[in-house]
Each structure stands twice: as C-alpha cells, then as structure tokens.
Length: 256
Image 1 (tube, helix red, strand yellow):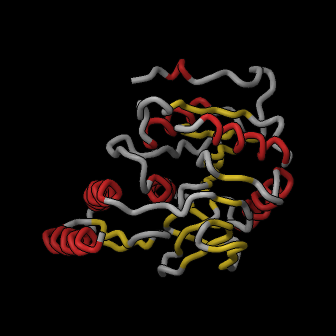
Image 2 (image 1 turned 90 degrees about the horizontal axis):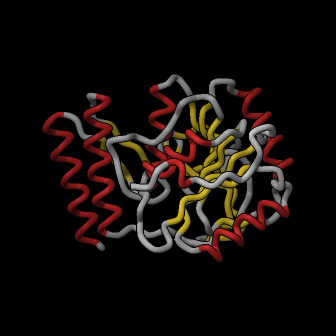
C-alpha cells in the first residue's frame, strides 16, 4: 500500500489554505483539466492533493480519501472527481454558500451538490449527462446521502470514511452517516458545476452496496432505508432486515 508520504507537497507549511482539494486520479489529463478549471475560478491558492491510480488501483476511495483528508490543511476539504469542471460558480460563491450554511446550521459537517433528503426526496444542483442546470431545492437542503462527485468537509471535524469499507462507491453516504454519528449534519448547497460522467451501477457497485448495508446495519443496530441519487439502501439489522436487503439487491442484480 502507498505510504502517506506519497502525497505531494503543493503549498508551503506557512500558508494554510482556505481550501484543500482531494482527488483520486486515473487520468492525468482529466485531473489537470479539473485543476485548471478550479484555478480559473478563484482557487489558485488552494492546496491540491491527489493520489495516482492511473496504472493500478493502489488506493480505494475509503483509504485514499482518508489519507488525503488527514493530510489536508485547508479550512474546508473538497473531495471531488477528476471529471468535474467549474463553469460559473467559483471560490467566492462557495465561500458565500458555506458561510450561509454555517449561519443556518453551525453543526454542519459535510455539504455537496446532489443527494436525498431524510424523506427520500432528491436535492440536486448540477449539470451532468442527465440534464443541464438541474436545480431541485430548496437550498440548503438537509440530506442523509450525498453523491461523491463533489463533497465539502468542514475542517477539524475528524469525519473520514469508514475504515472497514472499501471500493469506490457510497463513501458520500458513508460520510453522511459518520457525520450524524458525530452529531453533525449533511446538506446540499446551491453550488453549480459540470460533472462529465453520468455514473454507473454495475455488479461491482452492488457488491459495495451489500457490504455497506451490512456494515452500517451492524453499526447502528437497526434496519433503516436511505435513498441515494442512484440506489435505495437497506441497512441490515436483524434477520428480517438481512432478508429484505438481500432480496432487494438480488432483484437489482437481475435487472442489470
């Protein structure tokens, strides 16, 4: 496994940045284009951290993001995909949105641009292959799940992905649950960007979902349902919860 020392130094120790931007990279050209779009929109003084998975998946999202979050020195830590592009809203808008969120709920721990409310209603502010300039508010919107394309963690909360999970899916919802356990909240904010990928649910995704449902059902000790932007989770506790979760996933696999 890569050492934390493999993370690049990108800014001097004397100048703690307002934002740290963390990305797992499989395509250097994509990451450089992402970084350029951030710099062009006011993030020139940000700390850019990345881990290189271009030759092999040496880091999964859970371990890789944990390493970068713990290394990050920014007041806010952005975890985003390499294929997001800023298209209007920049650093000044994000600072304004986070200041408004702080005034609205000082206990917030994580924010993003797409997720689902506790009642299962989608809350989205994004352009992606599913549609341009999507805006399903109100904003800020309290959520129990967040899509992983763009996440903002409040620095100093200690919230990181679960150490007993692995893979590249559902870590946004994992962070939301970790925030709730720490007495903090998760929100979708009005921050518009372009995500180039539509996302994909395949057999590997469903394997991660099964592990996620078992881990969090065991941790919480009760069965519950959480909607995300691409699936419905059944956190499995008790034999009924395990049977129901397994049945729902089997149906989803059959439809692939």
